[in-house]
Each structure stands twice: as structure tokens, then as C-alpha cells.
Amino acid sequence: MKANKLVTLFVVAWAACLPRWALADGVIRDGVGAISTGRGGTNLGFADNGAILLDNPGALVNVQGNGLVEADVDTVITDIQYTDLKPNNVSAKILPMPLPEVAYIKKSRDGNWAWGIGAFAPAGFGASYNFQNSFAGPVNYRSIGALGKILPGVSYRVNDRLSIGGTVGIAFGHVDLEGPFYLQSGPLKGVPTVIDLQGTNVAPTGSFGLQYKLSQRTTLGMTFTSMTRVHQNGDMKANIYGVAPFPIYSSFDAQTTINWPRSLSFGFMHNLSSRHRVAADLIWYDWKNAFNQVGLALTNPSNPMVAALAGPAIIQSIPMNWHDTVSMRLGYEFLPSRYATWRAGYVYHNSPVPNSTLNPYTDGVLTHAFSIGHSRRVKRAWLNASYQYSFSPTRVVGTSALAGGDFSNSTFRAQAHWINLGILVPF
Image (cartoon, rainbow, N blue to C red):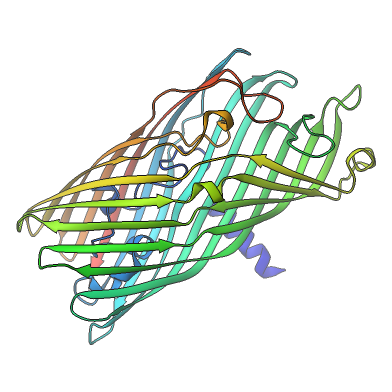
């Protein structure tokens, strides 16, 4: 019991940093940490920051010196605009939200092995609006879907050109949904409710990566990251409309299943000269199998009337129907001296979300990102900073595929500003 309480406290504390963000490729961030984000999220061909534990564990053994320690705070400010015919024309609440990341990497004395451990927040979704709803009147829509990872990793130098590595760690998932919700399946399909849902749990996660030095100037990288399936256990409180002359209240035990996608990525880093280098990463995300649907199992209703109408268990399958994407990341670095580095980058990917299931709980519409960054050496430490701006075109929903049609004839537009600060100390 104590262990479960500690896990829940850790996840909720981390998730508290994630409640109102708009992300990039679906709900996966375009880069983690100031160094990678400043060059457009490119990291597969590099070994100069702690986020390689997340992006390519095969690079651990290629860090300079004996290792490094790094701490970053990535802060996001979002602006999500939603309109419909109810009429609503609202923006999600904008609050700066800091996301901490830490990493430690240590090489063996002979330089053939390296190990490390890091904590990252690579994905999530969330927003908060005040809407005019068709059956509940003025109501708050709020969502949090947070993924944090603790990743121990190890890397081995196979020969002078090839290094391999992997991580096996723990993923922390948290979900929090509040607002109107039409039941999507079962005997009460299409019945409107207003819910307050929370859930938390952990799941295994891991990755495998490699780096290959094609030449003195060019390094190739490849990484496979496993799908992370998190069954978040918690509870749900609901007011159910339309089955009686008045709303019926019931609480439930709830399990929400969210699959965070597997990915396969390829990239390179090339030194144009001693002062200029470029990089490119291509990342495939398996959204089709991950976000085909979100599962929601409700059991033990507290209201016997609900049990009589729908039985002891209400199993929901919320359609998402997302499609796979390929994210293209481009990066550039200028090194005017051994005390400074300047960076720039660009990211492009299609949105995986079809118009028919687009909704304000999980928008995932951002498609472009531009970034700049700078590092300055102060004694032994590197002070790192970057800024990233992400935006989307306006998306239009005609007829929603979700039961109830609550989001038909609506539009979405989103942008996000990331400010990343960090310190890295090599040793």
C-alpha cells in the first residue's frame, strides 16, 4: 500500500506540471531539453546531452570525457482556439508550465561501456476551456494526459565505428478528464453525461538504439522505441442525463487505457567544417495502433439505478482513428569558439488526427515548429537555452464521428511557445 501511494504521489506531482500544453507530432514533443530542442529536436547522431537516453541510448558510450550530468526545465505557453455553433469562441487557459528533466551518464575506464539514468516528460495532452454545452449549459472542459519516463540505460562500443545501447525503464501515466461526455458504446450509447475522471498507473517501457560513424565527419543514428500501454486505475464521478427527468449521479471504479505509440527513427549528423554542422532526423510514429481508440472500463456503480440500466460494468471504446505520421527534423549548429554554440532548427509533420474525431480534449493539430538555441561555457559547465515556436493551420470538423455529435461544425487552431533552460556539466 505504501508503494502504491508513493507511485501515485510521484505521478500526480509530475503530471501537475503538464495540464495545459499543446504538443507537436500528435502529442509527442518536438525535442526534449535545451540542446536538442534548439536544433529542431535532432539528436540521433549526437552524443552531447543527457536526452540521448530518451532519443538514442546507443550514443551513451560516445559522450566526451568520462560522462556528464544535466538538468533542464522546459516551459510551455499555449494558445488553443476553439469555435462552434452553440455558439462558442473560446481559448484554452494559458499558463506557463515547467517540465523538469534530469540525466546522468558515466563511461567505463576503458571507454567501451557506458551507463546512465534519466527522467523525462516526452509526451502528453491537455487543455482547459469554459464552454456553452447543449445539455449542461456553461461548463468547464478540462483534460490531462501525461507520460513521464524514468530510463536506466546501457551502451557498448562494438568497434571503432559502431556502438549499441538500450533502455528498460518505467513509464508513469496519469489521466484527468472533466466535462461533458457522451457514452460511446453499450446500452447507454449516446447518453450525455458530465464526468470527473482520474487515473494513475505505471507500465514498462524501453528502447534500442545504435550509432555508426560513417566517416570522421558523419555519424548515423537509429532508434526503436516500444509502445507503452498504460492502464490508469482510478475513479469517475458522473451526472447522467436523459434517462430520467433529472440527472442521475453515480461514482464508478474506472480504468482508462492509453497507448503511447512505438516509433522508429533514423538520422545523421554531418560536420561541414570545424565550425558548422547539420543534422536531420526522420521519426515514424505508430499512431494507427496506439490511438485507434481509448478504452474506458467503468465498474461498481454506486447508484443501483445505473446498475439496473447498464449492468455492473460499462465498457466504453472511444474512437480516435489516428493515422501514422513521419516527423522530419532539421538542425544546424554554429560553433564560433570552444566556449559558445548557436543553434537553429525546423520540424514538420502531418497531424495524425482525422477531422472526424478531432475534439478539444486531445487536439494534436500542431504541424510546424521553428527553434533557436545558444550554449555558453562557464568554467566547467555549459549553460543552455532555446526557444521553440509551434503552430497549426485552422482545422475544421464537419460531422463528428463521436457519438452525440458534440463537436460537429467546429474549428481548432493552436500554437505553443517553448522556453528551455538547462545546465550540463561534463566530467
